[in-house]
Image (cartoon, rainbow, N blue to C red; front, side, top):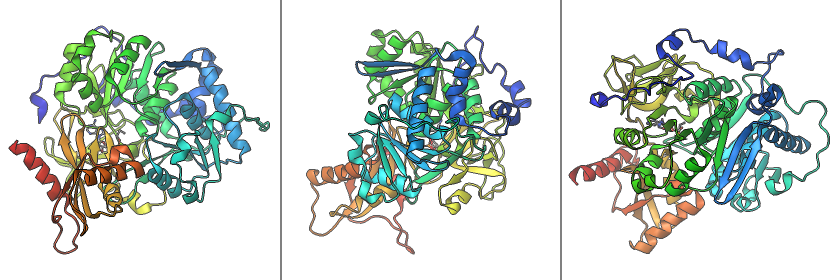
Length: 557
Ligand code: WT7
């Protein structure tokens, strides 16, 4: 365990939104926080809380967002975001969208993408944001699974939407047109007041078996988003907050949109992919104060240290990380070179919000993900679901319930039930250790799931795509340890008769997965074997054996 690592003390002379972890934890109740969000009639609307409330409270002219994409820059106030959202909401209503309908959003990281999500939620429908790099198959599988009826996209990305294969899809709205679409007046308020248990947003995420599953969250999650935004992101009124994730991933929706805006932050939306120079320049130019990103990005920045000379990053006061293990080296680098602590956070698509975190007012133990959020109880369980003593490795579980916890897996009661097989616990699928001071240390996944650059990839999905290629007979896909990306996707395949190994063939197979599924899921390495290891009885491919091969090779090196 990494407890021997030097601890990092909290910065002095600062006031934080959560000043005393132990005290707050003792007096904590979710109900106390939730009260603020419930209307007099007992109803709620997360989109109203996120934007409209601030306009009503007199903050309409405050800057809600800065959008940067290369040379393009835009700024919106809260009032402007509200007006645009209302217009989108009315257009959706005019197209017959009703409470509970699933409306998908397939857009790059632009203000339109954020506004679309809010507009859907505002009228009581369920938002289904899709990651911008998805290809046909990934788009189709998701919309089909929960029978989405409407899609908001643009005229370029629509080329990756196989409309003929999505029978439920009735309407496609293009952001290029929405602004100028006339709207018929909607009677009364455009806000649909809903119950706390009504559907809010659906995020698809991979498991180790089967197709991606639809994790459905309820409006009650706003309570969790709000209070974790306040205490963990430590948002204050003059902050400029930047979360680098796309809203198609849960980090991008919960901590890129809901949590910061519930706390009335000015957010930064950055278009385009990762480039160290652009990122540093953006922090410098916009004076970003709070920054939420992932270990892979930090590791890439660390490798280009010379850039630090060129940019002024002194505006940064609070930095956070999520999605994959954060190496102590990276924490020490940021501490020594940037003078900031990186605060690791642990949670999952299914948990809807932060569960294990580091607070700015508390000590950091590098190598640990932090401690349980107030109101959250961690358990390290054995195979029977019994709690293990401190210091032992076991299954990381959380006492149920809490407001952010998913409501269901769309159309799959069995998959949902798998998370709750031990009475009173949510089972994460991670293995971890908790020390005597309550700090939790991530060990590994307890299944075959791959984590590459913080993106969760199910091996089954990649294997299924691989064997659709005419040359591939069988495929086994694993995560291979990688110093930058944490893991990379590695595929082991056997070839059908008549095919011989060549560089071109391997590249063709890789491109086949990339162009049908998604770039991040395409194997970075493909190795051809004569035979894949299998279980004797059922003939199932033994991914663990394939993975051990990779780990052995690294050890020998
Ligand atoms: C899995 C969840 C919602 C957060 C983004 C990823 C891994 C998450 C950490 C961390 C080590 C982490 C776990 C978890 N993970 N945070 N701080 N340290 N591992 O969400 O795609 O649903 O994946 O990501 O293995 O189970 P996700």
